[in-house]
Amino acid sequence: MDTVALDSRLSKSTAAFLSHHRKLLINGEWVAAASGKTFPVYNPATGTVLAQVAEADKEDVDRAVAAARRAFDEGPWSRMTGSQRGKLMWKLAELVDQNLEEFAQLESIDNGKPVAVARVADVPLTADMFRYMGGWATKMTGSTIPWSVPNDFLSYTMREPVGVVGQIIPWNFPLLMAAWKLGPALAAGCTIVLKVAEQTPLSALRLGELIQEAGFPEGVVNILAGYGETAGAALAAHDDVDKVAFTGSTEVGKLIVKAAAGNLKKVSLELGGKSPTIIFSDADVESAIPGAASAIFFNHGQCCCAGSRIYAHKKIFDQVLEGVTAEAKKIKVGPGMDPTTQMGPLVSEEQYNRVNGFIESGIREGAKVTAGGKKAGGNGGYFVEPTVFTNTNPNMQVVKEEIFGPVVCAEAFDDSDLERIARTANDTVYGLASSVWTKDISKAHKLARLIRSGTVWINCHNVFDASLPFGGYKQSGWGREMGSEVLNNYTEVKAVTAKL
Image (cartoon, rainbow, N blue to C red; front, side):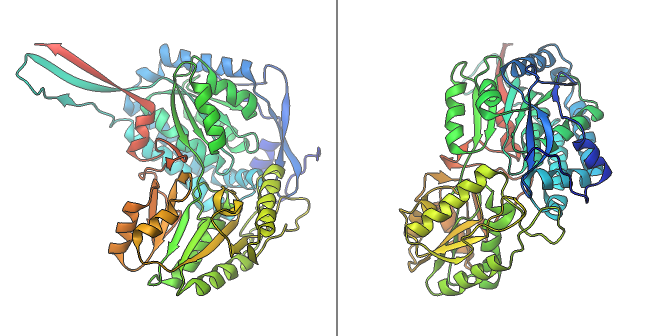
């Protein structure tokens, strides 16, 4: 497990990037950790070491926050015009496009996802996010406020950057999550300390090189690799950070909130989910079956909005179950760099053990496996078969808890009362996403009103755009990512009143 082993299919640029120990980006320079420590990054398809990366800790967080504070307070970033910031963000988007293949390969070997998926989804969406948010840099305006009583005052509002932002991102979409966080914060004029997931730091570190190449001033974006218990905790608790943004598990999100209480820094959270996929008897079943399968098996089920609970009307339940089971069985599981792979390994040994533990608990509690249910072979990699459960009940772990893997539970319903269906869909501590499959658009929109989740997809699932807000109700988080809504996370509103 200590030998660096690179896939022969990697491009020269990707291999060259992996050939050096990766450092931390602090104040515009690549530096070693203050402790001198490094940690190994593994290829989840083989369990072998890809690279050694500097391990940030509290002292590195202090240095990065100080750099971000200087860049914000002393300039030039917060004093640049929105047009100037936007041009730099568009330049960064162009550089991401120019390095598409290298980023796709880094995502594949570091996260495990198929390189073909990263090429058409993760990397293009990353560039699109920087372009979209770069456009917003010139459009964050205030308002003139009319008074409700006769007066001799002029009142207006200004929207200003919140300041120094600590951002902590997950491992399931490493590059794209970096863009989701960096894009709006940069557009608003904030400076940033980005803590990347220890499992998947490579693409964000490569992005840091492009941030330098694009010409961003030093200290505006600082990128740290390290563990959540050390670097992440220090960033969330730091008294000179004005706001912390976190994407990850609900459990860790609660720790972030507690850590942020010291200086009452602002907090936004994009957390877990247990999303329902509801298929009515009048649905286009030929579309709903592959749609429901994709809802759970896309990205190996490692999506916070994965459709991990299928509810199909009893008239079509057997057909849906048979269809989703068949879809699961024909998915080719293999290394992400194999061009024929449709589902790669889980991201880490820890995640591999977690998902297998849930599968074992479902079997132990009496659920029936119609597909998968086993570990998949793969040269020491963290492979799990796409798994379908039925004969479940609401009290089972596999139904109640977020698994974050390719495991779905399918149940039948025989009710036409939308309120009762909504209660079943809402019977979870989460409220991130859901999908409704029916030809009756009136019914779909009525149910969309009743479901308590931040996103409701109708006759589709996992559909995203930079312009669409994304976030959750209940324990799925606070605030929204993407769209114009996300700018509220990174700005303050100032009211100004002048006597005339």
